[in-house]
Length: 220
Image (tube, rainbow, N blue to C red; front, side, top):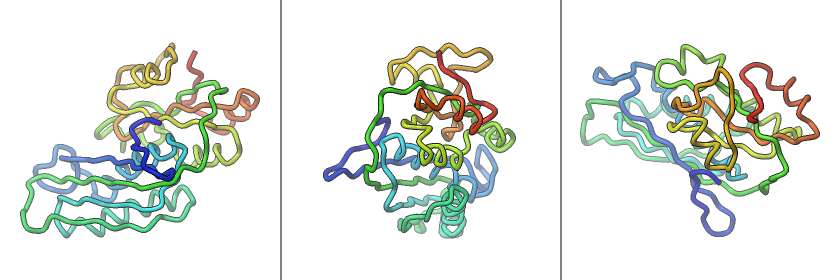
């Protein structure tokens, strides 16, 4: 389990937030609200998968004003539609009493554990670390969640571990492996989990390489 909170009866809580990114004049990065919520939900979902869980409910904390609510919901639903699974029920709250100068959102997911950790795997890195405007500019280089979900369903992937702001090297240390990767920036932030570490079935590594294609490499 990465940054998830394990609750009673096998329930798991995950969350991600974003600030200064959106459609407000004073935002550091200007991008549509739908994209902001899409990537916040992406991180929370990957944290669910890292815990072996699937989300049952989503809570949106919107600090950008009522005009952003529907856009945020659209972005979250787009993520689940692309992956090919039903979007859980979404609830939440918007700050409407105070006008904020910059955009801010948090996406929280409540899920239930459905799979157990399998330690007999070989670890791979998938997706190039990207942050800020790079996430949009280099979209073809970041980890594709639909491919990850399909690989889990096919029995290729047994463990999922998203890379956060501390980079690949730090996440490898957390799971007890050494990162030796040529032509990869091991300390760069992966922003909204643009890079994911994957525990691959040792008997299906060639199949996994064909499935994921580019920006997929063994961690040795």
